[in-house]
Image 1 (cartoon, one colour):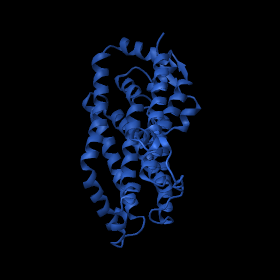
Image 2 (cartoon, rainbow, N blue to C red):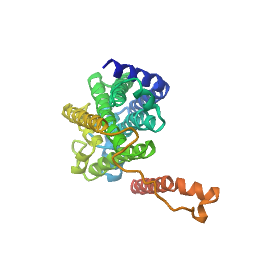
Image 3 (tube, one colour):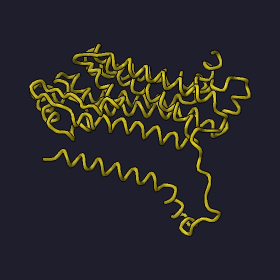
Image 4 (cartoon, rainbow, N blue to C red):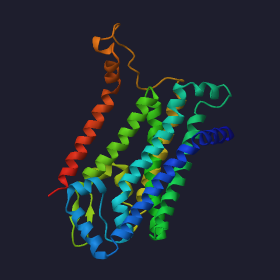
Length: 321
């Protein structure tokens, strides 16, 4: 255990600037959202009008989440939780891949292994660091909400909801890092899973049932397939329900335990998904030029960005009359 703690401290020292930027940025986003609601929608009628428009628009629900009343805290959580949870998931996922598969690709694990630590010690240290970073993030988000004037109890629950989603993706990324053959594919897969969670949450919310008399929306079943959907069920500023936090934390523990088990059964540099290293002996004519090589290397990223832009454009168009 001492070796795991020392490795976690070493990883924290390497990442102190990056983690500080992530945590302060996400907490600052929450503070800015809460401040904007309290200043721009100070009257109950203004917040009620905003929530009524959102509850009647599937595209708005897809982008933002579930309206749950018109209090300052409820509107802030509805407006900002989904995006904040996505950022928390990406922070946790990239942290884990950076200290697991990326270090393994770069040969750092060989140096660590030469000290006599167990095979899974670096992964356990990363899980420990990831958990600590997510807890700090949750407290920072809660502090931002409290600083903006939101209720203390609800602010801590809202921060815990963001942290629970981030913690689940820490476990998810740890598992993905064992399965995928490189840091690039592991990071891409983990980020895709975060995006899929957002899309599933959006689909469930857009298909939900609106109750305009109470200005609340109940999500449809696809939201249950998303950790972000579970996180918003906490409803921290209305009918607080901590049970989804326990579900997400339990799932994170299971995923982290599975990742450790896979690491113990995997050789250094190996993966459970084989890398595709086969190819033709000669490059095609289009690959012998710099533009052709750049296109070959970046076409996947360009296609994914274009698809994302098209989806966001369609959703934005759906917000219009």
